Length: 449
Image 1 (tube, rainbow, N blue to C red):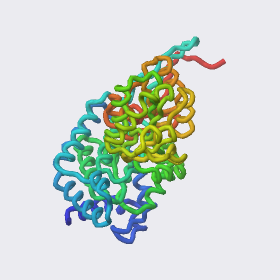
Image 2 (cartoon, rainbow, N blue to C red; image 1 turned 90 degrees about the horizontal axis):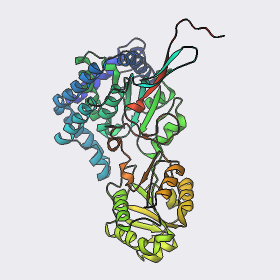
Image 3 (cartoon, rainbow, N blue to C red; image 1 turned 135 degrees about the horizontal axis):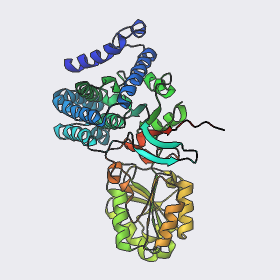
């Protein structure tokens, strides 16, 4: 316990002793949060300039050094996690929350391995996105560049500290990370290990920093942009957190508010394929954002497909809430309300509705969906192409489970989240999505007439 207290005091003192910060602090335990956050932002901006110019080899060496330091710091990190777990249990947190928070040697090794694996991804910085020549002889290149400083606000999943920091670094960015209070000690110990790895590789430790206070005022400071030093915010957490970030942020946000995902079983769907996809989409992991929350069944195949699909879900332990046709198909179904079509359950519950064909399915998804991930099951290629073209979601699938809504399944490696907005990043936010671009123009003395 003394080691953890010393670590927290050491990290805080580093900022409190900076010019303009210490004068406002009453003690190491009570920092002047606005001044602390300004200093954090100032340092991150300086670090971002250095990291943006780092070579691929330097960034990869830093990632491998960070993974090594996480392994070397295992005792400290696991001790910190024990304290976080004890506090969470004392507060009566549910078992699912405790499981997300808990680390053991195997889980910590998986975190280190994930950081290491990011070194194996292609470097997104400097990619030639387009090259063309104008009639006047100007040669124009569009080249991928880092975003700058990325603020990540997340709830109590310690692995996000490592994943987010490593992804930001690979894309040439600095990261300011703000974790939920329940995982504060664990996340701080992981971030400190990553900072040590950065320094060993010759890059600034300020490129990955965890906000060294639990004070909630730190979140508001990040959402304000830290005097222009944060370029984008990425929230990772529940609906209330994401809603607050989207409402209050003064900088761009990559996020999704909800994952209300649909599977539409079209009239031309193969029943056995539909059963496999629906069961996986709902029950593989019910608490992820790609879990199916609504099943739509085409009236054209309801006589043969509806009852087996509903029975399969119920027998797998999933509660089914349905419209009148679905209730008629199986007496174990409870009535669905209008609110059910708008609900992200993140649990073994699904709403089921019979619709009149593709048009009504698309209309339902547009009315009740969250533009996250939606799938059609059908052997009719024309219907599938219409669905893929007309459903306005970040991820649309044909004959595949919605649980593929994951950066690793796209071949992107780790991801920082799923974005459902229409600007810049959309879908899994991996290293490529954590870049912007610039135009480089080469001339030979041209002037504009």
